[in-house]
Image (cartoon, rainbow, N blue to C red; front, side, top):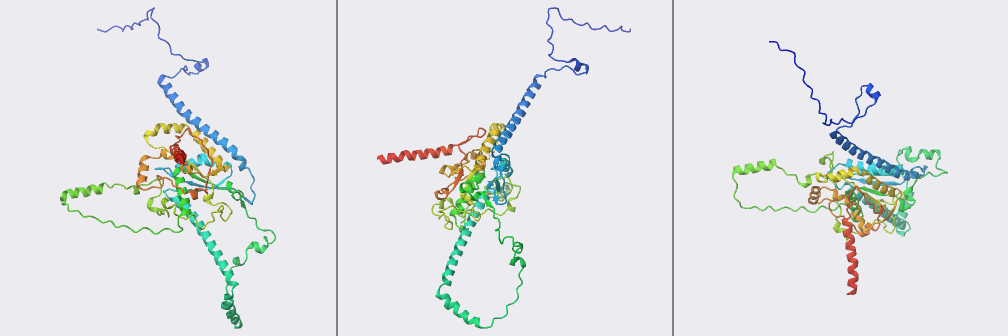
Length: 490
C-alpha cells in the first residue's frame, strides 16, 4: 500500500508566560546592510582574551621602544652643539679608547650591540672620535694594554740611553784624549793621497722632497694639527670598558705594564711527577677490556678545553694568550716604571696623556641566562628605557669629560654585572684560575695617578643594582675608624 504524504512537523510555540532568549547585541548601518555586510558585534569571550593579551604584549614593546627613541633624541640633542663646531685643518677632535669583550658564555656581538644601541649615538652626535679594541678570549685586552705601556717604557729607555751617549760623546770631543788618539793620527793621514771613492747612486727622494723643490715651506712653516686632548690634560681622551670583565683586564694590564718587567720572565722549571706503583692484583682481561672501552667512550672535557666565550674562530687557529709578566702578589715589591718620569703627567709624542693617565669609565652589559631568571628577563625586556636613560646619561658625562680621582672603592665598578654571570661558568673559571672571577687587586701607587668618569650614584630600575660589595667595604672602613679612637683611649 502506498503511504500518504508525510505530515508536517508541528512547531512548538513558546508558552505565553515563558521569557524569550536574549538576542545578541549588535550594530548595523543601513548602508552596510545594503552592501551585504553582516551586523557588527563583539567577539566571543575567547577571542576577547586573545586580542587583549596580544595588544598588551605588543603595546608594551612598542611603548618601550618609543621611549628609548625619545631618550636617545633627548641626550643627542643636548650634545649636538659640540658636533656642530667647525674644525679647521689645524684641529683634531678628542679620541676615546674603547675596549669591548663578550659576556660569559656568549658572543662578542652582544656587547657590540649594547655599544651601538646606547653609547655610540651619543658619541657620534658630539663628534667624538674613538678606537675600538675587541677580544674573543680572556687575556687579550690585558696583554694589549700591558704591551702598549711596555713599548712606551722601552722607547723612553732608548731615549735616555741616547741622551747619555750624546753627553759622553760631547765630553769626549772636548777632552785631550780625543786629540792624541784621533786628532794627531788624522793629521798625518791627511798628508797622504786619498784613494778615489767609488760612485754611489742615491735616490732623488732621499735628497729632496717635492715641497723642498717648490719652496713651499721656505717662508711658511708646515701646519701641524693640534689635538683637543693636548689643551687640557683633565679633558683629554678617555678609556671606556664595556663590561665588568673588560674593566678587570684593563686594570690588570695597567698594573702589569707599570710594575712588571720589560721582558717576559723565564718559565719555571717543569716538575716531574713521580709515579708511585702499587702492588695490586691485576684485574681480569674481561674487566680491563670493559674499563678501557668505557674510558675511551666517555672522555670528560677538562675546564681548560671549554671556551669562555662563543667564538666563530677555532681555538687552535689563534696563538696562545701570553701569561702575565707579574702576579698581583708581587705588586708591592715591584718598582713603578723607573723608565718614566712619574713626577709629572706622562705624555706621548703628540703631547697627549698616555693611556693610563686618561680617565676610565665602565658600562655594564646586562645579560641573564637560565630558566629560573625568566621573570627578571621579561621585566628587563619591557623596561629597557631605564637602561637606555642610564647609559645615555653616563655617555653624556664622558662627552663632557666629567672625571674625579680614582678611589679604592672604584675597583668595584660594574660589580653588579657579576650577579648575572652563570654559576657554572664561574665555577669553571675558578678551576681554570680565570682573570674574570679573581678579585681585582690594585696598587696605591698606580691608582693614585688614575682618574674615573664621575657617573654618580644613578640606579637602574630595569637592573638589580648590587651594592653589597661596596657596603661591605664601607662597613670595614667605619669599623677601622671606630677602633682607632678606642685604641687611643686605652
